[in-house]
Image (cartoon, rainbow over all chains, first blue to last red; front, side, top):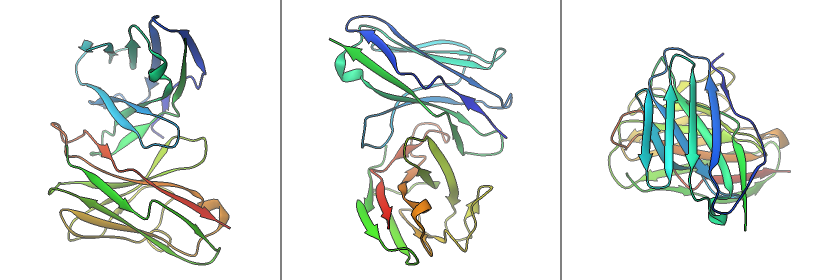
Amino acid sequence: QKEVEQNSGPLSVPEGAIASLNCTYSDRGSQSFFWYRQYSGKSPELIMSIYSNGDKEDGRFTAQLNKASQYVSLLIRDSQPSDSATYLCAVSSNSGYALNFGKGTSLLVTP
Amino acid sequence: SAVISQKPSRDICQRGTSLTIQCQVDSQVTMMFWYRQQPGQSLTLIATANQGSEATYESGFVIDKFPISRPNLTFSTLTVSNMSPEDSSIYLCSDNSGLSSETQYFGPGTRLLVL
């Protein structure tokens, strides 16, 4: 069973702070890692992808990957109330193009 | 990324009936997938829809319950057969139209309630 684990939260941060979201995965063969944002009642929206160890930055978002520790994280700088959503970590399957999703972390950014 | 649409956006159905959900992509894509998201849960892959051949189902999902068609590179359907209240869920299709073949984009989803 391929596992992707996330803290369900809610994670509450004040506006302007850094939100840190974490994810661990069990399949050592996974090569591709994704973060999706899902607003209530909406479908998941891709915000970041990362394939190599280290950091990848895109605007206020930074994804971090450590394959040795089987750990991927998402940092959101200068958090805004509009960032309040559930963040889903997804990991590629070693056997193909399917994605395994974590249960998501609920983020609440308070004004 | 390709633009994905789904029909219907929502439906309320009686137990024992079947519903077919359509997924349309505005450009040709290699892979299309069907997921289920039960209330308060994350996404679970039902199957990969293969163009011109039978779908590849994940453990716990069978063709008799969730028959899938993919007649071309832009269209797929998922049927939820002989529905029960446990099938109440959001059904999402996705494609891999991103820069890498593993990158998936999702349609708006179909919200199904079975009474």
